[in-house]
Length: 307
Image (cartoon, rainbow, N blue to C red; front, side, top):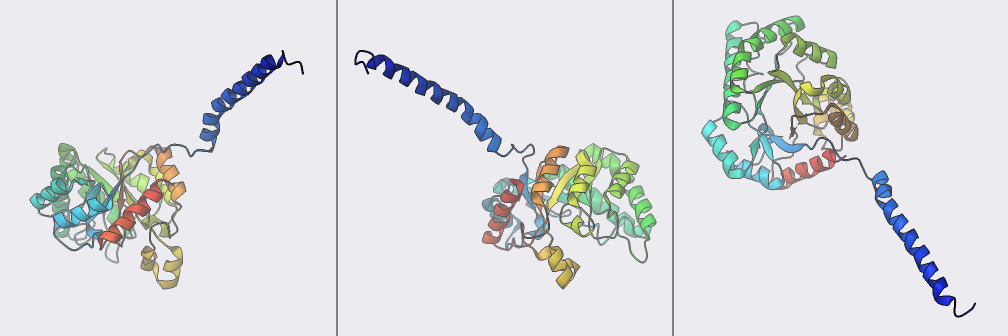
């Protein structure tokens, strides 16, 4: 090599390497994006159903423990001392995600006795007023119960008739009545749920979808896809078919989050796909009887919501 040409050759070599580095740097973000998980469209906020908080203490002490565990919201029951709940919300920093009607099991809107239905309706009205006071925006309602005394058709007709009576109050308060799917032998298919809402035909009546309850009857993803924007709130619950088959149906709820039959990645994708805008994912799960148990629930929910 001619020593006089060496600086020129070295300079060319440097420029070639620099150009290659710039090109690779430009490709890096695209390569990283290709491997990265798509951003979640729906960012669920964690809440917990008040009735499942086994932590001992006053309402305020329970709410503070829930907040410390990493939850943002809580679902109080209807008929509680409003001032006590408001104080606990304010001092703990929690938000009321929903209110659970307190009379719907004992005094169902489907009961054969009109007097019983009236008590149930009063309970729903009170729960709506509670939700307004707590700024919850939604009341969970089990609409009725099919039994030896109440047929499916009677449950359908009576519950709709009673719900229609309270729709004007729901509209006045700005609080949605959200029907929950439970083990009441009523509305076990997603098409039935859609038909029920369509017959009521009110923007103030939507669905409170319980992910765990429905596994015994069908596919949570199919329900989410069918109900879509009609879902006002989500109950987050696990269920194990193995435990149910070995120890009885109710034992299925003994599974911890992420240890049951729920396809959480598929469920989260469905929630994204339908554009769920109810904000909250509300845990109705055992294990919240201690600070450690509450923390475990919150941590597992973070993993589920990120799946």
